Image (cartoon, rainbow, N blue to C red):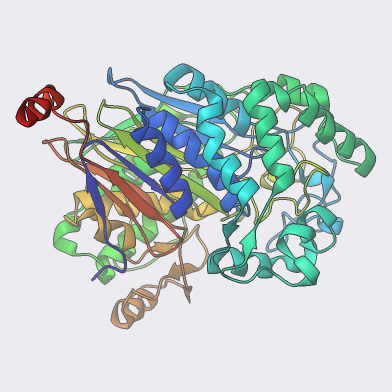
Length: 550
C-alpha cells in the first residue's frame, strides 16, 4: 500500500512539493500555457510557500524535453563571487568528520556563505525561450499568495523550529517566521508583503531588477555593510548555461540526465551500467542481494565522484570513460557478492538536503524536470532587508581547503547532486522524475529507475518505496527495509544506520502510449500531483444549442 494516490490527466500534469505550487502550475496550463510556463509559475510560488527550500537568490537545474525531441539542460547554479579566494575561510580540520567545517561557520551561516545567485535569470531565460506566457502572468500566483497570505503547513513549521536559533538573529526572517520569538504553528497565516513587492518589481522590470537593478543594489549594499562578497558586478555577470545532457542505454531504455557540474547524469549511468550485469528482477526488491548491489554501486560512484562533479570550466571531467560499458565491466569484476568493500572513497562529501523539485508535462510534448535550492534550510539564515529575499548559502558546497577539485575559485560553479532525469524508450519519454535531498538525490533517483525498469513497480509505488544510501561509510536504511535483510547486510560487513528518510519528496510523471499522464509525489514532503483533463467544447456546440431552442 502507498501513502498517497497518483493523479491522471491527458492535457497536462504538474507535480510539486506544495499544493499551492501545483495549483499555480495547473493554472498556467488551464490558461493555455505550456509545461515551461507551468513549471516557472510553480517555482516562483514555491519561493513564497516553501521559502525554506527555494528562492530567487538560489540556483538549480532544469531538464527540458521539447516537442521536437531535443533535450536541453539549463544550468542556473550559483557561482563563487569574483572576490572569493580558495583560502577565504579558516578551516578547523584536514580530516573527517569536520573536514568541511570552518571557524565561525562562515561558509554556512551569514554573509560570507552567500554565492552569486543563478535561479532568477535562468528561470526567466527558460520562460522567454521555451514558454508562451508573459513573465507577469507567470508571477501572478506567487504575488497573490505573498500579498494575501497562505497557511503554514506542519512541514514548514518543523523546518522553522529546526533552525530558529540562527534565524532569530535576523530581523527580516524572525518577523515573518518567528513572530514573538516563536515558530509559526501549522495553520498560521503567513503574509510576505516585502517579497510580494519584490516579485511585482520583477514582473515589471524582468530579471534585471536583481541582476543590476533595484533589488541587486539592495543585495550589494547589504553585502557591503555586513562583510559579504557578492557585488552588483557579480549579479550583472551571472548567466545560465544551456548544456547537452548525458545519455546512456540501460536494458533497452535510454537514461537522460544533466552533465557536470551535476553528478546525476554521469553517476546514475555509471551505476546502472554496473547493475546491468546482474538480474535485479530475479534478486528481488529489498532482498539482501539486491540491497547489497545497490550499496556497492553507490560506494563506487562516490569513489569516482570527486573527479566528476566539479565545474567543467575548471576541471577536466572524464565523462566518456565514466559512463562507458567497458569501465562498468572492469568495476563490476571487482564487486563481491559475499562482502562489502571499500571502493577507495575520498573525503566524505557534504551537501544540503534542503531543496525542491517540480516535474511538469503538457499535451504538446514539452516536459520539464527541475530541481532548485537555496542550499540549507533558509539558506544562509538571513534575508535582504526590505525585499523579503532569502540568501542562499551555496558557498557551503565548496571545499574550503585550497588545491582540491572542489576548492573555491572566482566564478566557479558549485557542484550538485541534482537529478532531473528522464527515461526514454525508442526516443519516446516514459518517465520524468526528480527529488530534493542533497547528496542522496542521485542515488535515490537511480533506485526509482531500478524500481520502475527492473522491479516493474507502478509509479506511485516506485517513488514511495524504501531507499538506502551510502557514500562509502555507514549504510543508511529507511524504516521500510525489513530487519532480516538488514541483519544479512551486517553479516556481509555493511555498517548500518537506521534513518527516518533517505532523500526528499520525489515528483514523477509516467507517460502512456495513448497520451495519458500519471503524476506521483511521495510521503517524504508535501508533494501534490495535479492532472489536467477535459478541454474546450466541441466545435459547433453553440450553434446546435441555439438551434435546439428555436
